[in-house]
Length: 82
Image 1 (cartoon, helix red, strand yellow):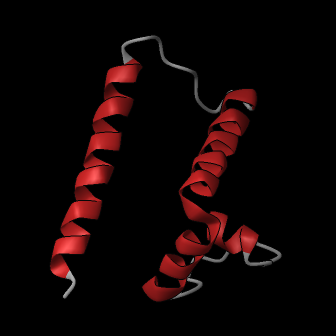
Image 2: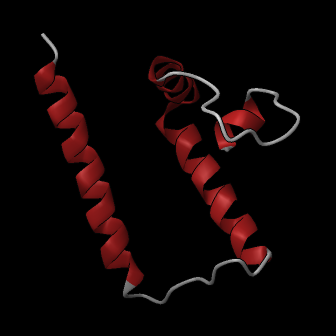
């Protein structure tokens, strides 16, 4: 859905708007810091709309684990490339 918004689509479509290479280029162009800002803005908007609620300190462990998985995924991605 974020991809559809930032690529200029006027409304949500159920079909996939692009292939995986376009999403990869989008992520590369936005960069890691940009992706963090997008995620933060998305979470902040969801909290403001009361669609979700913020978790307490125990959630920091989960966030830490997710970041570790993301770093591990990057390592596996590099290993798979020649």
